[in-house]
Image 1 (cartoon, one colour):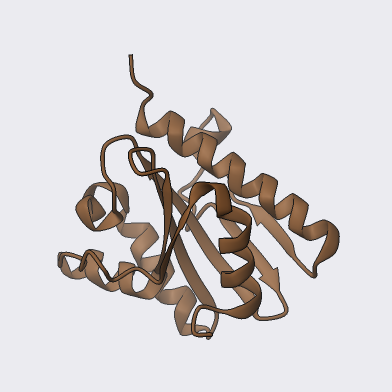
Image 2 (cartoon, helix red, strand yellow):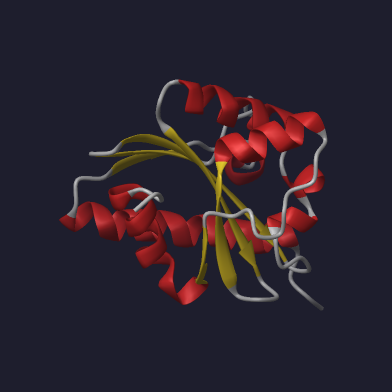
Length: 157
């Protein structure tokens, strides 16, 4: 039997948190894990994302998504991103900080990074994402490099 997207998603969130812990040992990084009902195992209010991460570039709202069948968030935006997450991403970006969605595809074993404002706007308007609209794509084995590039150099470099 295959693994479910929720199990793959929980494992991916743990992988991201583990990388944050490693990065925090040598870099100016602090983060807060925002637990939701699924991850906490009991009722909690809706959270805007999975993490808030602080680096010298500012505060980043970061949401992790995963799928056992899709290769891109562009294929499953409406199913994967909740309306409150889309709204939070747009509002966070208005503060001048970064908002990111990371999407892990179990099929391709790659991680896509998406601009949260783009995700928020497309989800709110019911528009489809372009397949090549992501900021960058890395193999999952290079998750730390992806996070370092996004959080310490920004995606425009």
